[in-house]
Image 1 (cartoon, rainbow, N blue to C red):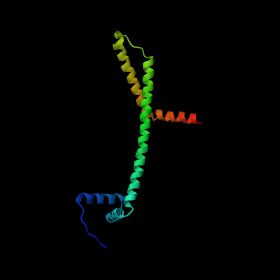
Image 2 (cartoon, rainbow, N blue to C red):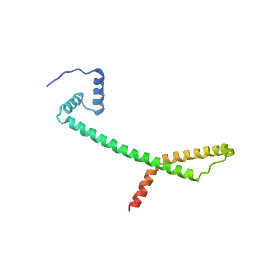
Image 3 (cartoon, rainbow, N blue to C red):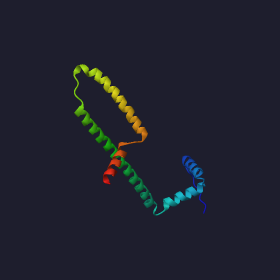
Image 4 (cartoon, rainbow, N blue to C red):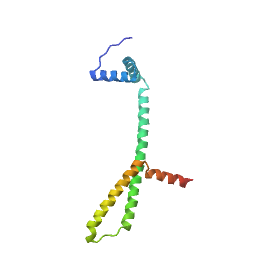
Length: 135
């Protein structure tokens, strides 16, 4: 059965572009879209697809949370150690100490950049140590 209908120009261009990219006819794209839209289980499939995506996003957020927690705990351990071993400086040595601190901080930033570029991460080392401890 033949049907004739009009599409807004922008939607028509999107349809033409999509059909061209997929190398199918525009009619087959419209047919598949209508079949999916009118299918009684279409909403269930859409819900399942959303559920899978939300599960994936949830796992990614859990992984991100883990990495943030590792970073925070690492920094806390470092800061505690630094505060425990660093003496308070007398007032007259402050400018020289500040210049030395800036230099050491620059070295730290360079080392951190090299480590991030290398792909070696603290979380990988933690997993390796955890795996070795489990054996």
